[in-house]
Length: 309
Image (cartoon, one colour):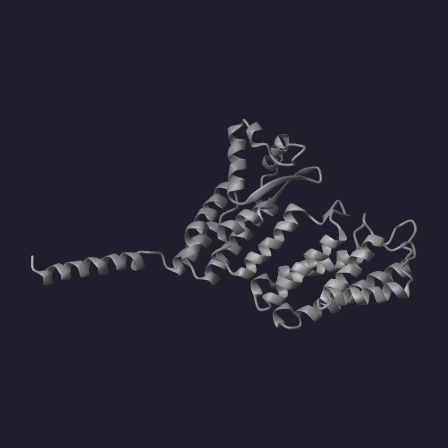
């Protein structure tokens, strides 16, 4: 065979090979359409598994924005199952298999085939069953979700998932009681503020980040029903909170949270750090003042971007 013919055949084969790599693959439009079709079904363990497998296969073939939207849609689909589509009888069937010391499911104790398959499917699609407030509750496992997709999604969403690990693994409140220290509460609020500062233009996370920031500021200034910021009996302001807040202000002077705390302490000084919850007028003034500081803080931290308005 002549050299020219060999080269012609080789080039033809290479062109056909490259065509198969590019032309035979799914387009972004096809991937999005097929994924939307999967998500149109009611969320069940089987459909969630199908959606997760599809996202894991094709998210890396999309642009960063495309992959981010796909994973965000997957997250919404998991939340749809947790909040709406779940079979609660099936969920509560896992209660018998929780280890009381670890608070985790002891998978080795599950002998029923259907229950074991159900549990394995949940964990595969990044859903973590926990025993919380006297019943089995389902939460997204943001650690594994981020481990699976963090490399292909926008860093803003990946960072938000890191924050959500705190929220799901160690909730700030339980039965209307504060479950973490005031310093940890401030740490979480600061992480949210830093996320806003670092990614001010990222509209996909704007609504959720704003809600988180508002929630943390409310908890910082007002506490909870069963962990009030003023003692119900004496009316005295919580000393641990005051110490944590003043330390934070010294170490994080440039933050909006520190600014809000400074305004907060001005109000506390005006009432001599005491309050009578039974006095409706005083109580209303306190909550109104906290609300005003929170709104001003939100405006201050979000004013750099119209997406948060």
